Amino acid sequence: EATAEFSAQFKLFSQSITNALSVADTPDNCDEQMSRLLVQLEELESQFSDFDQFLADIVSKREEIYTAFEGRKNAIQEKKNKKTL
Image 1 (tube, rainbow, N blue to C red):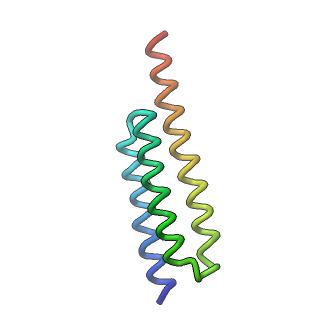
Image 2: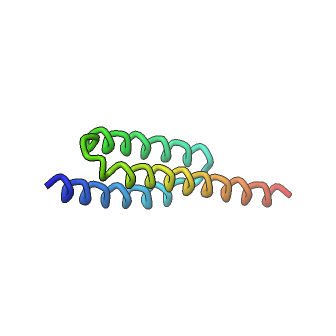
């Protein structure tokens, strides 16, 4: 039962990442969206803290969030820098 619930919530959370990336249009907005998602991920982690088998997925998703939003932020900044040249 916990596996099915985690799977469903984790899938919804993954969709939230995609949505947040699509609206992250400034470096500050990237930081805000990333922070919001990390709080949600912490809540998910605490909800399923008794299940070690989910920990690797959560850690991996946290790294994915950092990578995606830092990449998005850098791309926005580079685009902005090119416009100013």
